[in-house]
Amino acid sequence: MRKLLALVLTGVLLILLGKWGYARVHDALVLPGCTITTEAEEFSLDSEQSANAATIAAVAYRRGIPERAIAVAFTAAQQESKLRNLDYGDRDSLGIFQQRPSQGWGDRASILDPARSTSRFYSALMAIPGWEKMPLAEAAQEVQRSAAGSAYEKWEGRALALTQALNDPSLIACRFHKFGTQVHTPAEEVISQASKEWGKIKATHTGRVIKISSWQRTRVALWFMTHANEYGVSQLKWNQVEWDRYGVKSKNANKVSTLTVTLQ
Image (tube, rainbow, N blue to C red; front, top):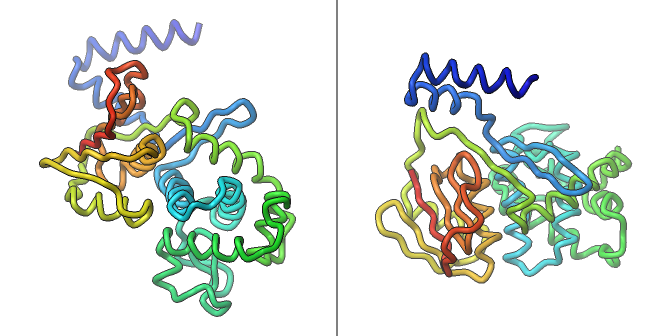
């Protein structure tokens, strides 16, 4: 009955508004962000949370750090900030991991830089003997030294799901508005920011189209997808996948050997 009602309402909207108006009503109903769906978990992140999650993963891949470290970082960041880059916190705590300048985590500016604060988190984690064999929550607490260390445990499932999803486009669905104010970030700036998080990437651009050669192109593509709002990404093509701001359009497109990023 609900599906029938939805179809009827859609038909009425098409008649009253026409194609142009309906497209904008549809666009207004989009909740920007990404939904992660695995066998064990299903949850949504808004555009800021999604982008920060992809940054956390990218820094680990750039440094050659095991994927389990990404899950530890997600466990900590979800509890500390809900994956938001906060400019406030308890006492002088700041950023995604609520790191404190007074405790040697760096100055305010560097802590509020997601890539740099994430790298410091990983450095601290790598220095802990046997962290790889610890439960995620225990490893997170060893780094964070929180007064409420037991609170990390409830995020372990989501942390594992998010780590998995940022490797597999079938597990993450990202949607953003197409209309309204557009973001026109220069292609050179987008390439520079991607290189900051991934290490120098092999990229060329012509106008608003960037072409990237990388053996990690699926991971890099998902980074661009989650950062679509921030940098004005309108379309992605890699392997046999095509994505636009309403989600994956095709999983059986012509196979390509490069990642193509189209900006607004």
